Length: 555
Image (cartoon, rainbow, N blue to C red):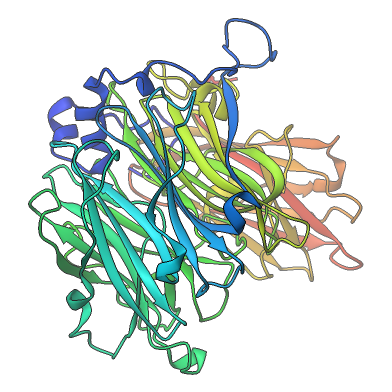
């Protein structure tokens, strides 16, 4: 189930109910009568009114701004939607200093009309209690019970972990209960534990999971802190909790801020920022097939271009027709915290078909939630000129039509994306360092992969795993790189050369290359290699937009 050169996988209602967190949302929330599932915010563009001249609807609202109540910064946001349709937006509001261990309020705003309007700010904790951190909600969708995990940061050396609960859609909260004891017998002497960021998930069997990351004291040299991530779990709706699986990290990548999502297959994906190891711009992924009790060895994820090392939004949902969609949000301007971008996958995050820029401003932490089958709400921070402090925390409301520019909608599905693979969204290997992705509205996949061509023989490999079998016409789309010289390429498929030399500099600016028909088999990877012939000096490069596997006769 790792390809979208076909009609994306659909699940029966029974399969949906027996699957993952996205399934629970579809099975339970889709039946809700909350306004979040029906109405766009005031001021959003209706696709039928012709106001914006483009498909879909989009709206943006500022929830908090620098300077309010003495707050100088905001980090680590979370957003979730209750079965009744109430949207809950959480953030750290930093007081007097941007330091992670400085005084912070934990703040909340609620919307009961799908994000059209928002209630006043309320507090989970106030800064006079210390350095509160990482509000991380998780909701039992059978009862509506909300549990928010968070922590108290003692100067980066140790932390204490707490929870509060609400049974009235976040209007009121229980007294705080400390749960630090869950991690007391940890195997390597971790003293610092932070839940989240973002939100937890609920599996189809009702189990609740919340991600937590761990390390030794900040006073220990970074290479010896043993960063890693795990989950905590509840099988009784959030009343009691236990420590679940710890992610194995024999390579010493060093995981910290992680996000989790559950697929319709029941698999749980943990996608993490790196706290140490080779790169703070790469992401690492681990998977669980037993409800978070154990996880696979963590690996570097190559289907997402390296980006600024901050937490990202990650959410899955199965719609009423049985089609699963996964979304992922992050900055995309290389190592800079700038340009928030939303990706969409139709094969369980194995690859990403399309993406769109949500905001070109400097952007920080983000979280995203499905409000219904076609509507999402993204909570993120806009940063100041230095890229460090937050100016505003913004809630952006948009639908599938806007995100995909009309290529996807509930019912027909992603008709405009079938058979097409964004090369930046495919798992890849390269003999040269990976460059930041390049956003281009004219690209078939909305972005192109830029590959510096150092010497002849340099190679960029991508992998497509078809879900269907049969004959497919293989096409590749290139963009002429500017201002550097476009490299000449040879293309290989599963080790065999296809077609003649490709002069990527001849694009105007795009070049479509038809490589004929190949046979594919469901589940068997197709490996496509772009090999540099020449020239490969003086700043030469090539740029690949999309790879398509289309049924014969498709135009």
